[in-house]
Amino acid sequence: MVRAGVADAARVNARWCDVVCRTGTFTAHVWKSAHRTPPLYPDAVTLTPDVTVAEVLDGIDTSPGCSIKDSFACLDLSQAGFEVFFEATWITRTAQVPLEPGWSRVDDRFDDPSVAVWSDGVSGVTANRDGGFAGLSNLYTQGDPDDACRGATSAVAASFPGLPITGYERGDDLDAALRNGYTALGPLRVWLK
Image (cartoon, rainbow, N blue to C red):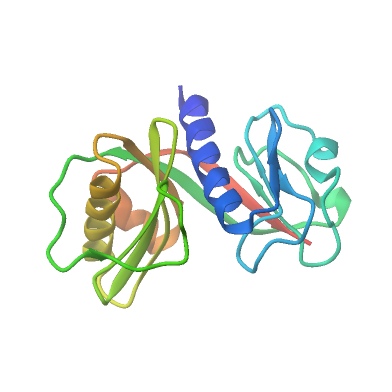
């Protein structure tokens, strides 16, 4: 059951990477870009736990700076010259909550109905949709992590009402998400060369 939730979260996250990068392709096991992606975006995202290292690396620029989101934390990319950059946890929540005061949509460069960018002036988040799931990405705050999590959740829920929300967090941001109704689905690993 956890693996199914992780697969959904990974797919939603890969869809967001595809919207930003505009150079990716989806296969049954991996999303990947033949061209180097923008900073902070992976060159590949695994979509199933049975993907092979060869499938992930085939056709991408594996020069220094390449990064891979190992969505199931099950690959060993060290033999290919990669090191673990960070580990995080996939999260999910179903939320039907009113929009928190002060949060509003921000004019953005995405001309795509599956994407919405929100801010309250202190925190911000990007919401995206893939099928029956909403993604919470790029959450940032200069304030309280719990306030940011509640506001971001309400913004994603306002963007795509009734859809389960997925994303990933680590450290204090993960703790805030878990305190605010999210459930941990499983680990992920980002590898960097």
